[in-house]
Image (cartoon, helix red, strand yellow):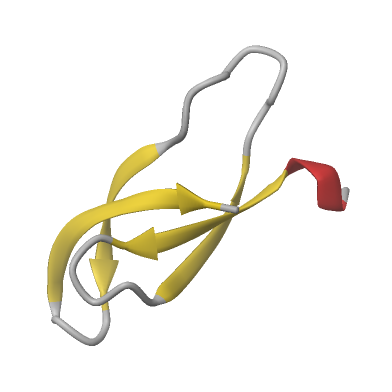
Length: 51
């Protein structure tokens, strides 16, 4: 995977970076927001894209 397509996903509650994913920056201009499982809170929470 190329590094320019990689995006960090941060938990909106505990603010830890739990996931890395890819994103097509040409088609998706806004920041990603996904429901993912947080290990520290042990539930599905919103994860947002960080820099």
